[in-house]
Image 1 (tube, rainbow, N blue to C red):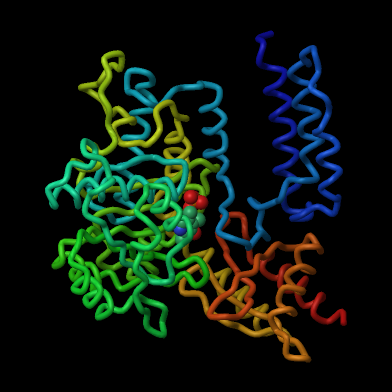
Image 2 (image 1 turned 45 degrees about the horizontal axis):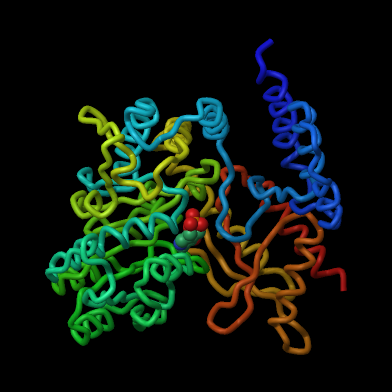
Length: 462
Ligand SMILES: *Cc1c(COP(=O)(O)O)cnc(C)c1O
């Protein structure tokens, strides 16, 4: 009996029981979270505990605090489920325990990433020559894009940022609309771009960055420029007009980066691909595997149209590192040094779905988002605020006294407390709204009906 088997078998038992319960368990359990803390917070023992028992007790202690976000009726934020092969591949990653920093350290991990990276570019319609990095998420992909852009933009200005440092360099201005995601502002802040160098440009009534605003902004500031465009805004799912905007940025020598955390996946569907027209002309793109592709967490991707600044800003040479000539050293492209072999689960997910499966998944989530938005928005006491462009819709709830904001938060609270479904709030154009985000492969038409029924019941109870 090898030394891992009992604890691994316990994990399989608990994980399978959990996954089997996903359809019926409350999305958020009723137990007070304090109970969970009580179960975890034991004094650290002097002596160790048998592995299998730890897993049994862990599963029991954690259960009431596990949100069924990978199930079919979780519509808050943008959170995917996990495909069976991607989950199992992720377990293999832990069992193999590879350090995916260097080809020499795990040729299999390096080659799986190399192949999956090429597949991703193909399915997302990005240039085949683009370099890429498998990151922990889209925010880390933003950082990757920003670092490569900084290198390229400052090099053009005669400044070697790796050698001279960022302090004292020409200021890079970032042009974008209010539709940007917080993870980008955070990435820029962490790298020292300075919040004041993010310039917010006007959008049209459709929420898209106005070409004339970009033109005017770039003309006004004569400095190295970085343009952030949105493929799938977090509340509305809208896409900037890449065909109109990217050529303008190009004329001004700006670097164009696309936040496509989930929206970039529209490119994989013949039905929604038109939303991404012209996107392949950008300089860098950031997206996620752990949202729409349904890999487990710790999966984002950066793609850079210009491999040289990408490599020059990130790679490192040290005498003890065995540099590969016949393979791809991940640390030439990735921010981390030691890292998880996260490419295997992407490889598995893409194989499990195939091109058609990804397209069908995108289409299905979008259809469910429309059905939910119209179904809930059409109920007595509710209204549609935003019809989905892709998989994101907005509704709100009306209050007799006129305080719709308070009422909207109240209804969301009641839905979440019912355990039947889970939604999150947002503030959009000054009003409180309920976000409807359909991002899991698990959501079915039955989940949609059941969710609308649960909301109807809550609205009719008073
Ligand atoms: C989720 C999200 C991000 C951040 O992605 P992480 O994987 O959480 O780092 C960035 N942009 C948009 C539009 C998102 O939805």
